[in-house]
Image (cartoon, rainbow, N blue to C red; front, side, top):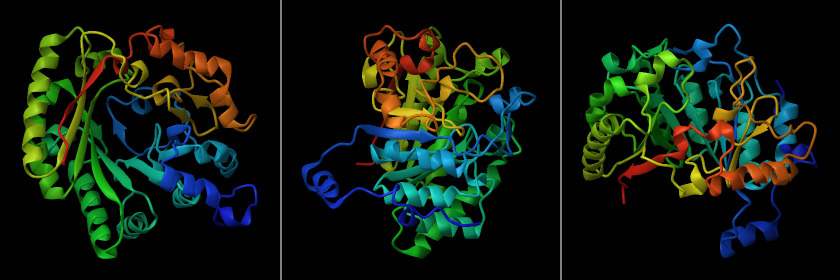
Length: 357
């Protein structure tokens, strides 16, 4: 398979010298903090809480094409970070490392989130060498008992082995800037497992764990696993466990950052923890949405779906700037959210936890 080579396509030029100087010496900020690109919606896991599982009969599985990714070039040039992950396992895409290379050509930071199933020694070495600065591994527990019941087909020990492969590859390369994180999903029926998170981070030599809750409920039967803003006692207990874990992690020079809903909508990051003022989501077919939760590839009519254009039809940066997309963002900032966002927990989340510094 031929590589995507930006050097051979005059339309895919990186930032010029003057732009690089402005960014490096004057601290000039790009228009977007991050774009999240769904390189694939294909996944081998069968996590019980994921729409990929609950909506398996109508799920739209596809890889992002070269044409779609190339069409995103204006958007990539305008973003500080490219995060290669959506509703699937990004390492299953045969072009994953080509996509990383093209984003690095644009002088972007590049990150991704993986379940680890695809990992082997060769992929670990390529990850250590490719120029990515962050790779997160997803978990819902701190041992097999707390993790495996929810993550069918993604065993805890397999994820841990994948993390060790990458850590070893980073060590062996000697120069890699790749930082390994945990993307930890806190489910309400296994809160106590979080107490062991600092120990697990130390065992795996992981610097940071970002703990989130179940923000997209694909099946109402899974509602008890989430944290609704009105469930104050439930949230208070989780916050207590997380704060203790964050303090324990900080004592060993590591960081646990978490977010749980507060009692009312907050204005932080434009009234949404997804930072929609300076980020957006692009699905595998090029459709542009404010965030991953507003464009689930479930193949059915979804009243929450919000798509403002497609990169194959229009310059994606111009789509981002157009009036209706800007009005959507302004509504969140002014606490007049679109109806698709009214009950989203991301509007209520407060950040806690500690820094390694």
